[in-house]
Image 1 (cartoon, rainbow, N blue to C red):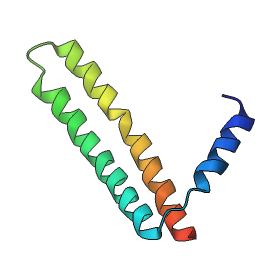
Image 2: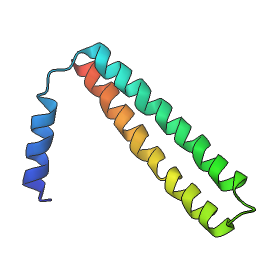
Image 3: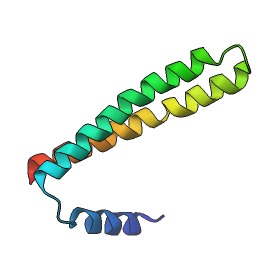
Length: 84
């Protein structure tokens, strides 16, 4: 996606009317999902070790990759709530 399309999309998304409370709740949910992803990745990594170790490790890493996305989303939503 080109930079022009991305900035256009971001502008449209930021114009959607959302209350501060809704943004704070969404931020808290994203933060909780980030921590749940850490726990889920660790559980997947360690619990399924005996069955198919390589698959368990790859799936645990895959789940662990979600964590930064959720934290970045939570941060963005919290900052947007502060600016409103």
